[in-house]
Image 1 (cartoon, rainbow, N blue to C red):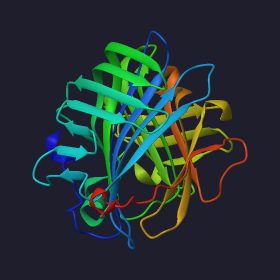
Image 2 (cartoon, rainbow, N blue to C red):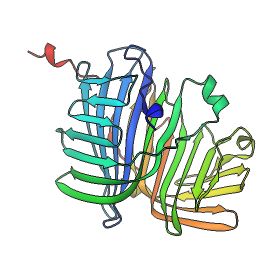
Image 3 (cartoon, rainbow, N blue to C red):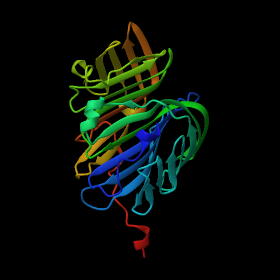
Image 4 (spheres, rainbow, N blue to C red):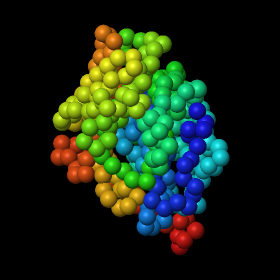
Length: 320
């Protein structure tokens, strides 16, 4: 939905991070792709933006590509949904980008936007929070031409989603998303901040919705587990939801982030996790097609860091 994709950042606010992303799965190769457009305005130093591209292929290490752009090389209109970052752009149902720093990547894609946005937080919480975490298109089909690390993909009718988040700070969280189930079309979204005492868990499947992102559902929610396995739980008005998500270190990519305040955070993500979803006496499976991310304040030893925290480059006009 356009309104929920519009930039929150006004181009001047300090201490802000905002990102839009497309997640795409290729049923033929079982590969997954994560394409991101990011603005960052730290408390100290100039604002900058970046294009990101990740490739996850079964049996091979993930590929992480990124190029950072200085002020003057990116723009966004807060009154419409339209972004420009370097050689990339994002608008309603359309996205393109090109990363010239190795490993190189480029893409052109189109998709059908969703009329309904999934929000991680209840309306009352969103009204008093500066942070926003939403999935304006929680499930769609992509037409994509993508090249990354020398490999070319031409995809049609590939399942995925498009999301948006904006925040003044990066804290610890655990996140999962699925747009494909072996038992039928639908989606599941779960996010848990901090130590997992609360979780937002929402499911849409077979024409029904289990809304785990309401005030009533939060007291009975949570996220538990250790290592690369987590279980999200929520008590919705449609009944209880339990979602077991599991990954392995060899299919994760590690990324170092810098909070707008300067603090470091480490995120570990894959698009190839597997999950089992229990609801209303039914069991749904997403084998190798679940998005899974865990963050920590210290780096883990079992997954290398592929991308370090970006720094703002000098504007092109200042180069000799």
